[in-house]
Length: 74
Image (tube, rainbow, N blue to C red; front, side, top):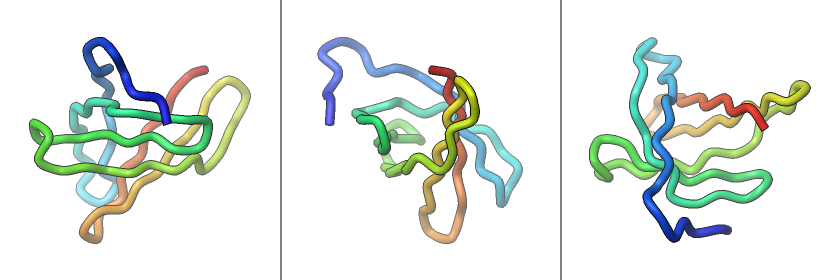
C-alpha cells in the first residue's frame, strides 16, 4: 500500500443504507484496495474494488452493518 507523504486526499463516500454522504480521507491505497477514515478519523473503512467500468472504479466497504460506496475516475 502507498502512504501519502503530504495531506490525505478528501473524497465523498455514500452510505447506501442511510442514503447519506460523508467526507472521508484516503489514508492509503493500491490497485484493489483503499483505506479511508470518516468522522475525524474515528471510523476506519477498508474498501475493495468491486467493479471497473471504463475510467470509473467502484469501491465498496462494510462497517457495522452499513455499506459504503466510493466511485473514482482514473
